[in-house]
Image 1: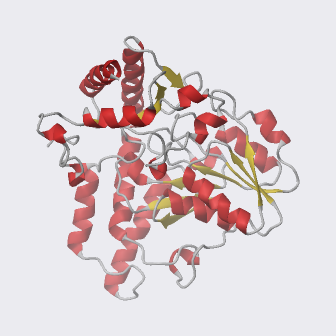
Image 2 (image 1 turned 180 degrees about the vertical axis):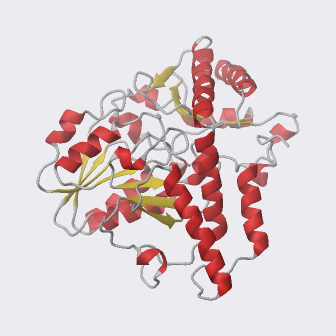
Amino acid sequence: MDPLAPCVGGRFRHRDVTSLNMRRIYLDNNATTFLDPLVREAIDRIDARCLANPASQHADGQAARAVLEDSRDAICAALGAGRDDRLVFTSGATESNHLALLGMAGSPPATVLISSVEHPCLQGATSLLRERGFTVAELPVDRCGRIDPGEFSRRLTPQVCLVSVIYANHETGVIQPIEQLAAICRSNGIPFHTDAAQAVGKLPIEFAQLGVDAMSIAPHKFHGPVGIGGLLLRKGLPLVPLFRGGFQQAGLRPGTESVGLAVGFRVALEQAVAVSGKQLRTLSQLRDGFEAGLAGRVPIVVHGSEALRVPQTSCISFPGADRQRLFLALDLAGISCSTGSACASGSSEPSPILQAMGVAEELIGSALRFSFARTNSLQDVSEAIDRIVAVCWRN
């Protein structure tokens, strides 16, 4: 079955496009990716075994615990973690980001420093920090969406207790110099967290070499299951849990762990690592061909193109168009894309990411995000370009 067919979740069946025999082209992989068949098979095998609660002390529980911990160890190894680094399973990147910021900040009064281009879920965590008495300061970015390390160093005042900078931006794909920023923080004795949801599974990442203290991960961004995430922690890092009432995961995240989802996480990551070199080339080819093909036929502006980007992300403005109208027209034309973060879906507010980059209001109002995965093909790109051009001419 075509993984891009309209049967995905039944979501598209109500639209008239099916009566036109139009093949859906899914270009919203930064929101979520389709589950890898090997991952699904691995989860199904675990579910078929009816494993017990991994916290139970009997033999069945111990068997479940062994599978869970094997998966945890394998994920840490695939991410290049040190021997004593820890992985905390969560429900996804949103919870991981909240656990990192709320669990690492300590006590107010103090300042938490973040970039001005963070994901909405991390901004949600900082709103809770403000309610608790913390000051939250934002680092500016240049017109390409990059943080200047020199300015970053100047912002590390004695009041700063924690820094969090997104690894790769969810809208533009721009990559920050995380290793350099983490080293600056380390020399100042300040803990550093990065939201790597859009980077893990796309870029080669060695946690120990990266030098960060904590890193958030979401396997559904690289063909893994929805409903599980991870927070990878440096050895000995103190962390206050969000929840109380259980001893699971050393009390850092109480609640019964899903063995099946943990296995799915592991398989998805190992698959991504195994094909990382080929995938990097393929995604870059798809994105670059898409941008070049559009630029040759309609006026566009590609945001962040002068910076280093993850290969799957393309944020494009169509000058003179209205992004919401264009988004709806493309949806009717069989193309799934995005007006920004999936967590901000339905919002008509201008993109805070593009605003932070100093993008002109007209361009912000006509910007859409297209994101690719290894389930996409050159045919998808060619057909998407034709449909987008046709829609732009009609509008």
